Image 1 (cartoon, rainbow, N blue to C red):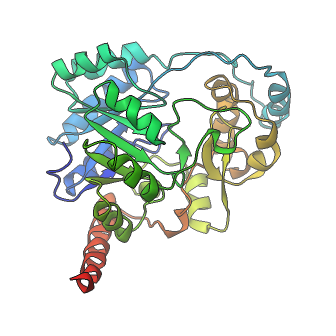
Image 2: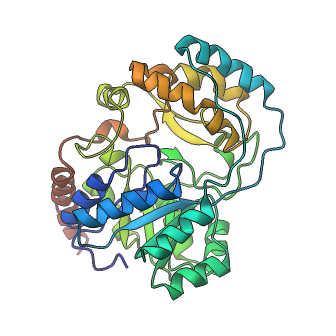
Length: 349
């Protein structure tokens, strides 16, 4: 699946805009692999992006889907009122804090129709029946895991590979369940630690992700047993990425710490600290996707206004070390850095 890549780097699926067909195609052309982000899209929009990507590259690529969870049972009134003031500031209406399944079944039908080579899942595992359907259609199944226990569950449903996500990763943690009142929503394992723990439990191919922005990071996880490294933040400022200008600027300027927050979506996600993270994180409920639907219009308005203080500036811990430019040049730099790191290992001989 990933073992035959010319360079074992995967462009992570970044939902909400950063991942584009152009980015996936560019990373693939440079010898890596790319995932389209299916999250937040309608089934029709996902089909369009798959079609566009297929026109841009004849090489395999993947699609990521969000596994739906249950509806929230907590009182959302307080968070709604806090965000209402932000909505008034931008002259927009708040979204409806409703539950939805992110059109999961319809999008599963889309990837089956297109016979997508690799379908990955975040926020849980697909059902054994869905895995069987995908296998019968010629697709490989990858599942994002954040703990050894989650890895066991993914193995049990028949996953072909595991994406092992360390707590350093930007954006949403792939937690199967968000524990209310717990910072980060659950146990926090670094990418290397989790990679070693999971590799001791399964022989499945493992893809490491979380805070990887340098070629030495790629070399490190390969040395630790991964078949590939998945990078998201490293490509946020790529020319082909759909990252909003204010987000790009905040990344380039640096200086902001990162923190986990439920403020924007109701699920723990690592973001650059801004006013919304500072003011709303402590009281943000565990309620995804209700909070995501609530805040979406405000975040969109802030993006249009170029105001980073109310945007979900998702990024990994090492974002300040990531570069910019064409995706191909980013991959080339990673390759050079990885080779340099590999030569340093010669002293172990």
